Length: 97
Image (cartoon, rainbow, N blue to C red; front, side, top):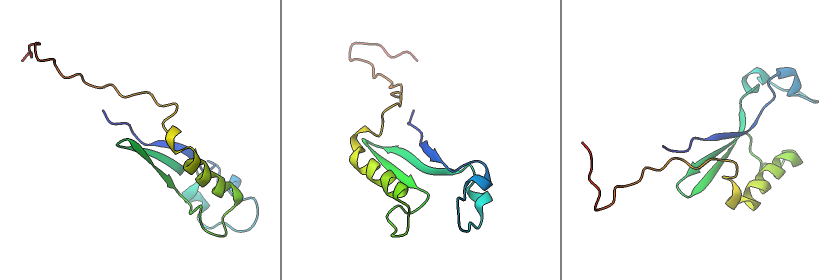
């Protein structure tokens, strides 16, 4: 059984809560959707961002999400339960068919 992707952060579920000031087009499409997703791949992780946290006009909070993922790369699996691993039969055990 493979470990499934985990949604780390979601956009607000109410479209009116997404905008603090300025303009927002298509807010209903963002409402309740994943903003940051952690996907285990092999022995590592891929962190997917809905926005571009390295773009020059992003907020400081976006930079913090990116730096947190970089600084804590070795602890991204915290809080996940280990998948059940199937044990291979030993050489002296019979395989039931």
